[in-house]
Length: 431
Image (tube, rainbow, N blue to C red; front, side):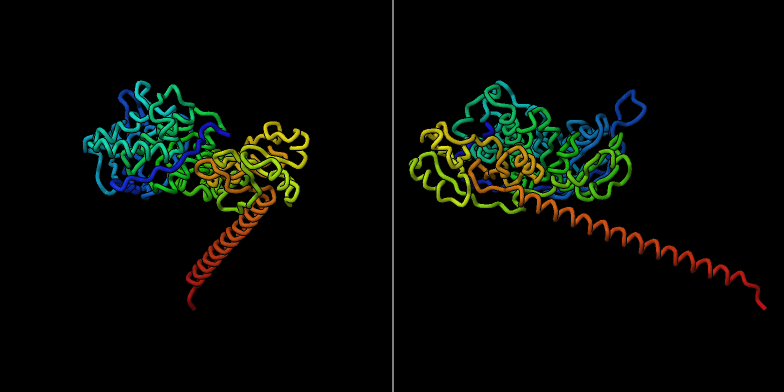
């Protein structure tokens, strides 16, 4: 099991505090020029981001995507242009006050090493004048929200956490004062691929609950597809090559530059657009580690499946038990079965699930809930049916697009013919 998925009892949200939804963001001709450079780092960027939307900035290194992000909370001051958050022009207000209203999460978490986890999370709420009791409740609430047991992690220091746990605390700190906007600058770039997948799933789950406006910088187009409601593909100087939904960019890239970012295998990348929760999660027989051995043996013998899933005391997937495992292990659960190495959450993509299924000889993967608890399985047949439906939908969409293009061409041809006829008529000499 991943170390970043401990289970614990939920903390009830404070009655004093109700979550603030996202805010609109408008960038108007936003420009950044550095002294001594002939061209601007960011050149006249304009875009509108909807409240509660996750927008991803993706582009080559040095294109200005992080600079654009940092101008939104004025960590970098714009040379010219305007920034509006919920229709308020924030370009001229106190930048420190602005940053307290905008959450910010970066690569390697940026936690203060001399502060405990609780002190790191409490930092901004204390600065804006929250009461001690409200801050205490909020710290526990945020730790629970990002899947960390408050009792276990409250007093730890960053050095005592894994990379994934540090990133979770970084997100908790960014959200602690309940800002409507969350800026994230390659926050998962420094962790291993497995932890990164889990953190991405966690962010998707959080966004389902919180509906913040998230602006997220990455150089990884697959990450952009997985996380974004819309993606801004940026050229040099943050010129916008295409700003659209992941599906639209995959199926209809604006030009060769965008096609280069999409890369090969666009159809496979579309597997990142569908979540496990959108396909059939099947029930599967499961038993707890504390159940009597005879009861487990009887379940194995009478089950229509050839195996059971053994759950630990927190109801998390632990081992796959097949018929004969208990006999060969002489009736001991300690030596019986195969450890569960891969699980996926409801918010994992079909690509994540397919990779997990393909690496498991059983042709299925366990699906877990918010705290790692077992909720069901998804199998190869379900995934392949979903892929077939997706490919068929793509085929129909492509046919419709070709039909529309043909009708447009036919209309243009008719208009051209009509114009030629009218021109010929006007040119005929009158008798």
